[in-house]
Length: 439
Image (tube, rainbow, N blue to C red; front, side, top):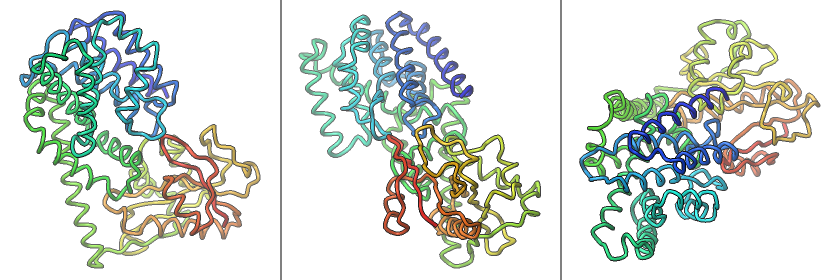
């Protein structure tokens, strides 16, 4: 939590510095920033939230929007700066959402009904209809029915605005500003960190959209191909303004995802040709105390998104604990390379979400399966199911009555019939639910 607060504070200070440089260091704009951060935090949507559209994303888009305004694609006036700042800060402001990805209509409805936000907008003296258009233009993908609906709503906003009702040239200018904001929205997080951060963002986005981990790299490659193919001129203009390290971050991430996809295809081909077999393995306690073995598992563990890294500080100790059940996934033999693991122990030793009220807690009859770790490229080949089945077999041998864990809602629903799984607690907007099966 300290890291969360520190990141939010540092990003906020960077935004405030840019606001001073851009001439919008007014009380109403600072109040908007504080109020937005407070809304995300009080609704549990800070950087510990397991979803892509958290406060980190909102602040990064705001920061990058202010940073890159000197690009040469669009001539941005002082009034434009103010409207873009507000649109960037509010573009995903939907704290009442029940799914991760905010719908632009829901965002606009929330802003329109929030008295504090409306008061701040009036104090700034900006045109809320222009802000609406800018937010609508961040609709993704900007194609098909979604684009058509957003354009129809934008037209209504233009007709209501005194600034655009009779000025079609300015309408085009606003739409270009919206395009600028849309590109910033899609690229900012990748320019503000290395590939490890980008991969965590991709995993969180995949989770939010209910994708299997096996689709993460493939969809990331498709995403960047679309972004670079359709927005190359705007990206080029933005890149000319960004510091060198940010440019390296963005293009380094793109290249790393393409390389990861090549490695993934190679692994899948080897598996299809039966040159690569995945072997779930029960590890002896002697092996589990070996420093190299622990280091290998730790590396896989660190690939999980941070909200899924349970017992982070005590990971090494838990691997060596004989009370913990541990299954690994090895390549080709029981002595082969380790590419994954499944680990868990008595429910009572874990501190789970406060909302969970498990009736079996304290009964010593339930084994908790932590989020499984698997190297990128090995998802979707059956290794995860193999590890889980072997984990369940060991739990049954130890006379546990129940197994609990977390999984995506669709996955749990599929297990209701197969394993008589039951939902113990459901969590929105993550849809990452706590469930139970009988052993």
